[in-house]
Image 1 (tube, rainbow, N blue to C red):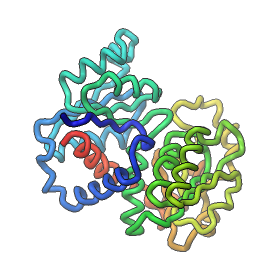
Image 2: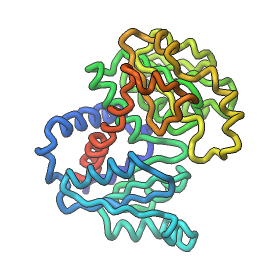
Image 3: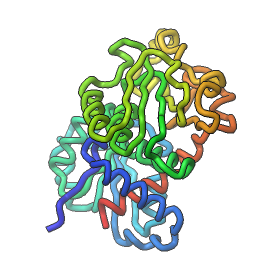
Image 4: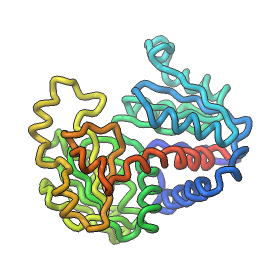
Length: 310
């Protein structure tokens, strides 16, 4: 009997599995017609507790282009979202109807409960802790731009206590990339300590360099400069001014990019706020590959769906 697989966190994947997903996404992107009926007759349920643009569209179009069908389910109008049904019962019932579930939730613990009670694959479309689909898509994009991953240096600047940074920490040290995280020396903005500990272990095992620093000048010589929003969905609006002040020196500007390698690229998972975490001339400039990142969500979602459902 085939073992049931989920995609909850990149911590659960080996470096070899991460690289194999990048390879598969490249193959599917280059030969899309070849995969047009790969998931014919398969159905994906998409749970959304958080707002979405790229996650919803990329998964919905991915299923359509693979010959399957996707159903959007807004949790605000569901028994689960209204607290009338448990997440355990929801998972068990959905398993009787569907072939896979993609869930975009606030709580990572809720996602784990869903997977524990599911008899079909569960995909993390984003939680407060982890965003594996985004970082897998990012690795696909970097691979396309540089024709390799091994030996490249990625520097992340800004608020690092978030799902994207955690996923970068789980993945990059194991695929041969060097990672530097630059953020204020303050628990509010620093990545989860257990994630950093795991990343240090992976870096040692794979002879990659991992640096956690409060110095934004660490961007010097980097191949990839990456940032994310300073105001994630769960942060109250009244915290914006305070956070802007705390994070201002980590803003990615043209000066930041000048310190990076001459062939460096800028990445942002979007949505972005110009003038906060990044200046307009950078995100809209020649080194920006944010739209390539966004497009590659589609191709990576296809690879994930095929990997889990075929």
